[in-house]
Image 1 (cartoon, helix red, strand yellow):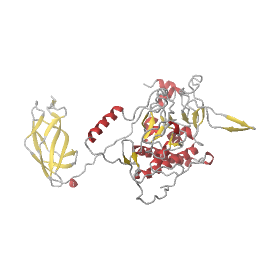
Image 2: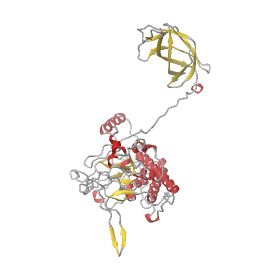
Image 3: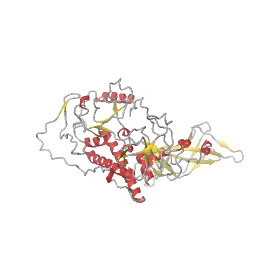
Image 4: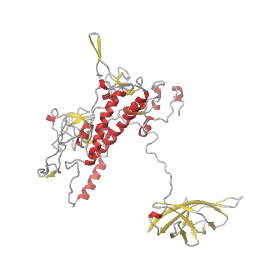
Length: 505
């Protein structure tokens, strides 16, 4: 038995209180929909009545031969019957709705599906820029603390009196096997992104706010890396922007102006590092062990814990779930009955980073465009894959500084130097991390026309922003992804002069 609730709408005009209706109605149902053949019937109403009354019950016949009965009511859109009479024509115009409850003996396979065209857009047309939090305030929780406490109370109520089940992987020490190929893809996507950026930076100018040091050795100039950073702002374009937004060292002497110099790959991809854990379920790292444990990129550590085999950084792989003997205590299961473990080999070939001297820049526009498209795909692949891995493997971030820890709980190293760290004795305020904590996007100003005039200080409100990697790829010829169009403000017209901007309301 198939039950559906449907609605049909039309407007009819008549000259008396009884209106003949003989119409082929299209009923839209929440469950199914079909074309129903309606017999001619009449309705009558009183001006003070809310519903129109049918003369009798009428039967409906579907195209496939199924029969049913429905009780119909006609109701006005404002829930009151109002008639509008014209003195010259003497006609009544009524806009009504028919609500019915239809019961049919047809099977779901025989009911025709409606042809509906729905146009949706997942991304807004324009969006605000990401907020820059002050170093003196704590990062907000991804989920408000009130919601976390409410969810914890609900879990406690549901688990009360119920036997405690086994912990799923990776909480029991095993790998999530379905995420191992994804971890390899994220690992290789990160290496591909770094290698391609080294090539693109040779053809796309990228500026960083800092100072350069030139050392003279026997009349030969050796250009060293950028040191003495003023601030962490970047700009992608032929020349740096003129906005007075520098908040670094000696910014007041320069009146907020940036001192631009050439940027490196480490400026575009912020090097977020984390401690490498041999046993993710082991004891927390103590303050005295902070120098004896290696630190590697946080994305790399996340991939290793998710199943990537890197010979330089071994990790303990269990073949049986752990046995809990307490809330925070456990013992490893006996694996003596299992065969000898097979030497672990990479599931997929692992890529390696190219030195900057071996990174060959593209020679023509076609190669540059293809390289930009590949770089943008690697960026999206790394971010989407890392977001899926973070849903299963916990990543913690300090609420006061950029320190990231991949594991079930943060380390105990007292190396937090953020605002008022003396009150916390240098300890980190660990909380759940989001994707931007693991892979900072590093937003920069979007240049609408690279070959056109430079950005003007007075027209700052008309320009958009995009992640540095996206802006580099777009200026190299790649298409703009849909998820970044809202902040780049591509549909906003930019005035040609300051006088024209003052006329904008």
